[in-house]
Each structure stands twice: as structure tokens, then as C-alpha cells.
Image (spheres, rainbow, N blue to C red):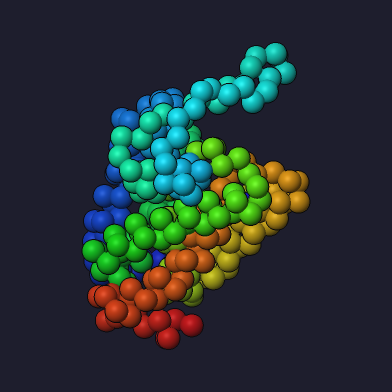
Length: 256
């Protein structure tokens, strides 16, 4: 297990207020709309459902019994709720939703550590554009993965992790040698970003292969994690070269 704790921000020159706003929105949605993950109706209304994204049609369904616990209680998946707008809006709304307190704490820690430097490099509006686009691409990667693995296309997904994976891809592109302090098992050490982020990505690949080998299609959306990370590399490069404002702060070529 590897957990980043903080990174070197000594070269950052901008206040990353867009990153702060994104963190605030994620927390606000989780607390006020998701009720700390207890409001299943909201989740099953605004999360991205692969079958809906593929068909473009809003799907409603009844609750489904998935099995029973060891105590004999039924495990029930709520039915899909009607989406008030086009189903494609869920590619964005799901980007600000989380499944649990641990999920949002981990995601916001990663966004806090890695997002500020990427915003500093790209510029405020460009970073926001990058975040939204890479989040959508990550969700589409998850949909494609569900189709390839023949997973249940009616299982909703939350796209926050995919967007943040894209941010990590951009961070690796721009700041591969930046110092990142991490917790590795019980040890705290400082490593280059290429090691910290690289190990994280390797864990995503390993977990996805394990899931594939077990014939499972549910659980963590590793397709979104991997897809977001990979999509973040060329997208960040393109935005930086065409729209970015951060060339005076760092040179991509000098960071390799």
C-alpha cells in the first residue's frame, strides 16, 4: 500500500482556487445531497449507468435482490431512478459523487496533493476544462470496460476517482521529479513523483487484472482509474501547449 501525504510546492506561484472549489463541491455534494452516502435515491438518479450512456435512454428499474448476508438478510440494490435531464449529464454529475466517507477522504487527499501543481501549470480555467474533460473520458472508459468484460450495465458508477486519476497523469507528465512524501506500509519516505504515481498506477493495473482473472465486473471501477490516468497524459499535454499559462513556471522538457 502506498499513500501520498504531501508534495513539494516550493515552485508553485498561483493560489489554486479552482482546485479548492472542486474539493469544496465534492464535499458539499457528499454531505448535503448524498447525506454522507446514505441517500441512495440521489445516487441512483445522478450516477452514470453504462446502459444509459450506451443507449442514450433513461432507464428505470425496480429494486433487485443480489443475495443474502451471513445472517440471512437480503442484499438489495435499489432501482434506478429517473434522471431529470439527459442521461449524458450524469457523466458530469457522477464526477462529484462518492460511495463512502473513506472514498471521499482518499480522493480529496489525492486531489489536494496533486491538483494544485497541475492548476499552477495549466492556469485556472484550463485546469477546470481539463478536469471536466478527463472525468468524462474516464467514465466512458469505464463504460467500455463494462462492455468488454460483459459486466452488469445497469450498475451505476461514480466518476470522481477517474477525474482525479487524470490529474495524477497530468502531474506525472509535468512534474516527474517532484518530491512526494508517502506512507509505504508503515514507513514514511520521500520519493520522486514518477515513483509515487507510478506505483499507484501499477497497483491499479494489478487490481484490474486480478478482477479480470476472477471474472468479476463489479466493485471498484478500475477501468475509470486506468482510463482517466492514460487520457490525462495527452489531454494535459495538448491543453498545456495550446491553452496553458504555466510555461513560465516549468518546462515539460526540463522535467524529464
